[in-house]
Length: 285
Image (cartoon, rainbow, N blue to C red; front, side, top):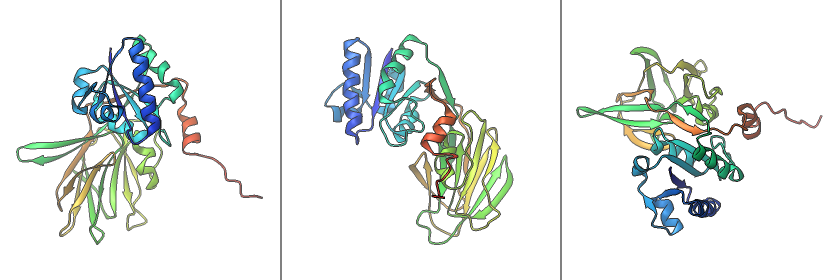
């Protein structure tokens, strides 16, 4: 078995952990390889471009926070991903640094379990083909620098759902429901739920609320505005500017992300400890 390692190179703690991991692999004659940017920071030639890792490796290790895990998931495709938290929140990353080697041993022994996470696919027509982007958390269309409030038009399976003025719109998976969507007032959705949530960003009407839909729906979104350009972001990464009335189609991707599960980790406990969900305030009474 060969492991691909992706490191958050902005964190010295992650780089130190990567060095320990490389030594651990070397002592056991286990094959591994770093993506190029990580290898440069670690001063090693044992590397491949991130786009090529999935073709040459059997499993991925993400050393960083949730952002690093999201980045890794885009390139892991269907390979198992071990997420090790070396960040701040660590909501998606299943393992602590102390648990890392135990998780790797389970993958080596074939005794690990998997969390299958749905992805979104956003696509647009380009010439006679379609340009496609994947997202584990969310697809977001924003007004960007447009000086007025544009109108977002949303269709489900070709039927008009709604059109409303807002600063943007978020389409999130159950995994992404605890990210940007939650901050914009969307609901928390259990990770195995086969649904998506459409959450408006700062809508101009009190009656516009988030809506949860089944994940077999095809969503079409366009921006009704006389001019301007509107950023399309997937998992927090800019993908392209949209022209007025350009239609983005968002649906469930055929590819799922396979996160190696930490069986000692409880989702309800993670909500309470990481997001402080349901915690009562002490008002000093």
